Image (tube, rainbow, N blue to C red):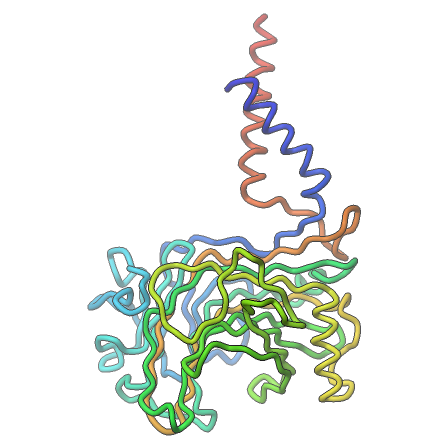
Length: 355
């Protein structure tokens, strides 16, 4: 190792103690090389600390390996061989070509939600959903306060939505994708913060709050605004923006949510539902992230295919500040430089010893 490389690595480590010390990484991409244990359907109890594909209102999509066709034909994420190691679908005839299915390979995941799937029936919600997600257990997330000490949370990922078809848009049927963060207010209530990304009805373009009856939880919906006029989040300049058109090929998406923006969402919820949730953004805890593919089909059939990869979640804090209850966790590139620097130090020490 050259002395110059060692110096650069050590300099980066010095920065870790200053600029980098004010960053907490909550989630970095996890590589999945076997979908077993990572696909679930219609859960009645939460599963914590597992990167997973979860489906609801589609039958048992996680029932068995799918080895007869490649889900990547629809999602844009080509599953490696053997297919059954990376894909799941329902039992025959629910596993026919293009039916409801999920896949995971490396740091990516994909899904097809297709109401044409054999034997699929509506419930009263008229919804069907597939979700790429990770959730922490309550003991862990009680310490995860991204907005304590004036923090700002960044939620980023890559996505493609190659296919979406709605048989009867005039009847209100539609398909859409979005990111979602479930937050605990620390006082027994939750809040969904949900940047909307794609919608067959047109590019998402408004912010609003409401109440999710399925989880009995308030939500604050926002979007990836091209003009950055949103109140609940900010779209970094390098991020793509919300759209009403399908596309193939990976695009980067990200939002940042400052403590004042989360406070605006909390205030909007409490203005509409008085005292529904705790009023102080600094106390909110990060419990779950998701990226969701959902269809609404009250009158006819709908399908939507998406894939997602490289999800990151981190908070940054003003110099000298840090989120309550957490210690700084370096980003992956810093860990590589750390190992490089330590290896170099050992090599130089050995050389000096020989001299």
